[in-house]
Length: 130
Image 1 (cartoon, rainbow, N blue to C red):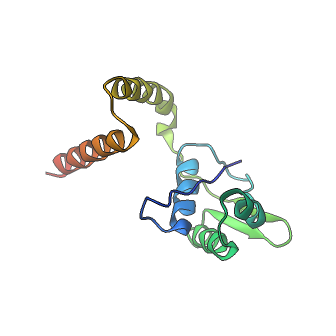
Image 2: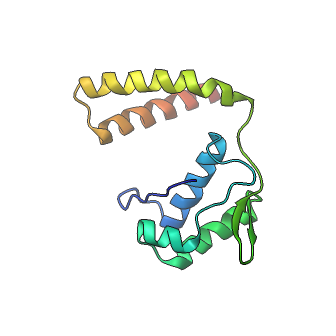
């Protein structure tokens, strides 16, 4: 089951953070069709969030066709975002872990690592477009 977390410093609304976390879990194969999402009550207790915010996130995911609510039972995954590339995730994750270790050994903190990664990611994406 997915465990949500919120980053108040991210500048991203809490409901969108929940939506993104479910989408990422679906893309990485951590959630599969038929899996149940945590109840609204459980999410509220876990991350200290307004129940309406959780409901808004779940409605958004339902609108996208990724989950479905079963009244009195819960909210369940109805579609996945994982594809054939899922098999490549393991080796890539190991490479990324090694890179993160090197970054930490070079003295970079979390924010610096994120900035370096995102800048490099965006630059590479722009170069691919050009």
